[in-house]
Image (cartoon, rainbow, N blue to C red; front, top):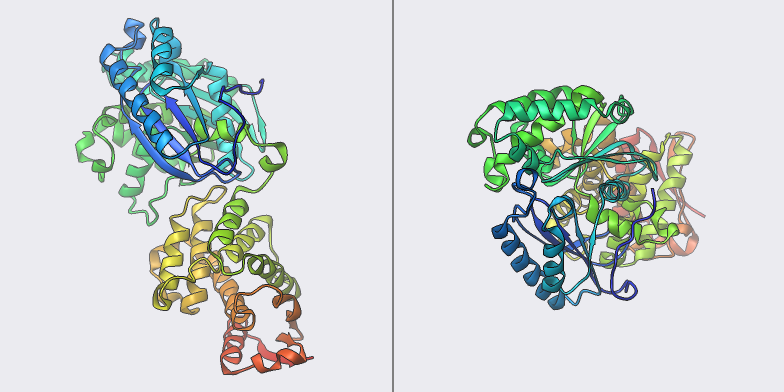
Length: 506
């Protein structure tokens, strides 16, 4: 599939915000990002539910009231971008403007309203952009991306950084509501027949991950979390077991939306579309048999920005990139976080504790995030660090990994007792990651009294496991650091590992 081509004035300026204006079938949205990077961070996000795609499937035209709302929103977004001093604005339009007979006239008026040229994406381009968004948001994804908007559904295969051939179908929520005349039974038949005609796509999904992109599916995931009393209200990376998902989706299709727990979190304009989103996802699960459904907050918009990165930047790990950014912004000595990565790695290697790639990524990220809470009051550093990390805008990170990172830094500040933190986040991490978090925190609690978060010290004070002992080696000129506080931290580490703790002066 060819590279995407989006018009934008001038060259990208990395030091200023960039923005995407997404003219979709259901909503018109502005998202401004801190800058163009591997770990894009939104600084402003606003949507207007215009419903441009409503009735396009039956009338072939964009509704005039919806057009008026969209043009007013675009004029507002233009002023907001000027206020934020945005360097580059990418404006894209999708299925509704693509399919409507008055789409060209609307796009001409829209370009005047927002003051920018507009790129009208084909179905194939929209599928590819969604896939690039998932590649930007997940570490080494493997499965199928499904992007359900108001007017269409795009399916495209992803394997690592490779994007397969995409397909687009008129199975968006507004389109289904329109062509079915509001009959869920008729809509279900339309969905089933359309998806059964695309076996080559769904057959490739068997035993792999389905990445669900789009506001309606995110809304369903939020309701699923509420129904399960899930402890972390973060959409990106939320996993749904297919069997449990099918039961929940059927409930959404059959029940009055008003009876669903936390339905207030879903806008009234989107609630009528929930049943259509549920039936499309149900049929994908039934026909494709994925091993899991992963909710993605990254989609076309993030894919557009990812496509603008140079190849070297694209290859960066998004989790490590985000942690590095926070380390640079918030730590007392950013280089210390990098030294902490190497210092803990050397100890774990001497301990003989196996680490798979997943473990290494999480430990490195935790080390880079270890000092981001230092400005808080000492009594609240653990709590504030936990909240910053657990609810932060991280990509390339699943929810157990979030819990591990948050717990590592919490225990670093508050001590190693699991009882100091709530059971819900401990449960989310699971027993293995909980113990890994306590171990890493114990290492940090030894490192900081020696280094005081300054670079250049940790390389001089190796910590290693040797002959049943945990040994911290101090050069002679640092011997005065071996006080009661450091000795106590070493004993805590030794107790955790059931090993004797020794401070050795070289």
